[in-house]
Image (cartoon, rainbow, N blue to C red; front, top):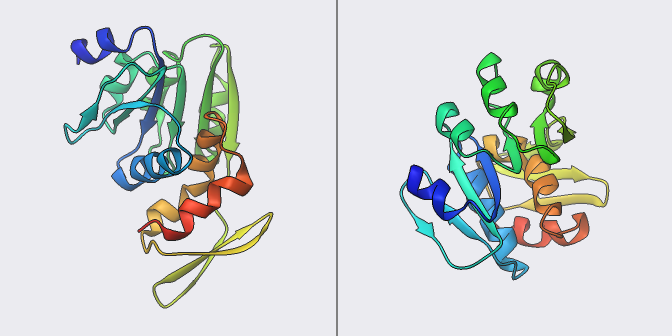
Length: 178
């Protein structure tokens, strides 16, 4: 863990705090589709460390997440409770927190200075095992049948925007993601 922090100390550390690996997989898919440069360290031990400015750090471990001292954080909807305070307080000043509305009260109590981007959860409909997202730009059918991922797509969208991927461009790789 110390090694990862040392290797990423001069990079923008983007933390995905989630127990759902599909959230990080979708983010990586979107960024690759749009040819964005980034490194990553995933909870399963898979990593890519080049000389990129951004590094994505995936974990569901709150202690490890706080240790990373992230610049940008996505906390997904299944992560809740007071334990997230230790992560929120370690966001570098001027950083960005993307969080589900279930953490609103905890986030608002933080004295740390960072930009707060709240998402409510993604509006969707389900027919059999097929999902359709209800978005500002219309209905978008998607291939994934992972309902936990679907609930956090708005969070991934907000995080992707920090890499320069705007909403209209975000959904194209999402439609085929499984």
